[in-house]
Image 1 (cartoon, rainbow, N blue to C red):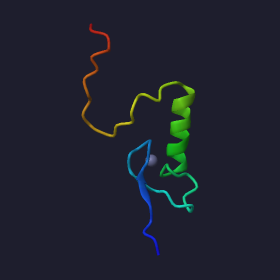
Image 2: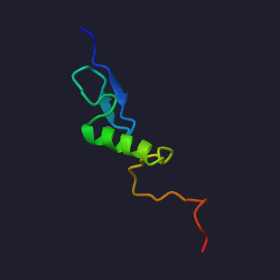
Image 3: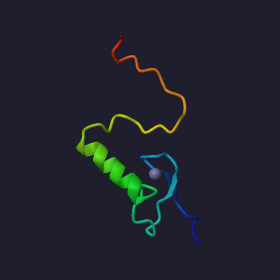
Length: 64
Ligand SMILES: [Zn+2]
């Protein structure tokens, strides 16, 4: 018996199953897969999904 293969979901960084039983692998869910595909389609893939309450500084944003 092999241990289950677990990877980090590319979208939400949570652990996701890489086994064949997970139809959305390497994503953890259909939602994350669709989010990733949508990001590619809109050309915003470079923006990481960060689940955090802290807002990071955005030096490239407009200074008012
Ligand atoms: Zn996910």
